Length: 232
Picture 1 (cartoon, one colour):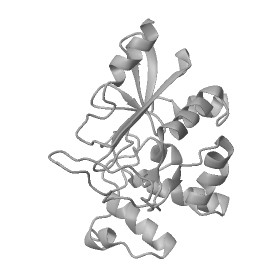
Picture 2: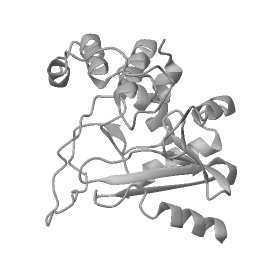
Picture 3: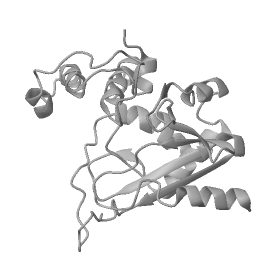
């Protein structure tokens, strides 16, 4: 059966439609997507047997588990346990775009207002800054967020991807350049925006890139940047 391990590694096999229906039932919110895809249900592959591609469906269900276990709304739990203690004052699950940089999409001659901010689901809708993401990565490396045992679980090589990388719990892992182990957060972008965060636990190093241009490749320049830092 499906375990929390499978949800964390995005290998549960649960279809997005089934996850959206579970969310709608748990929250009492009608979901247009769930209604449109109501005929789809069940598992699309055996849990833990493969990684189907980047999806927020498993994280959607993890958010419901967090709400049930904590007794708090997901956004409040993040604020109380991570953002506020770390001083991440410009990070939140929100639809407020007041102070957000305008984004550029491929082919745009003018910047565009953000057109896709959910602000309530686990796995998507989070807005932040380069300073706050740096605080987050530093806290991870310093052991201020997770115990060594939990950190090892988060970076376990759960499922092999088609690229030869592995999925961990919310991270992609690889032996970068054959020289060191790296873990990258797979998606920090929406239409008009892009970014990536990489931590190298063995080197006690992290880097974060955020861009308001979604035409740039995810993690643009990251490999070169990492090698430059390590070769100094």
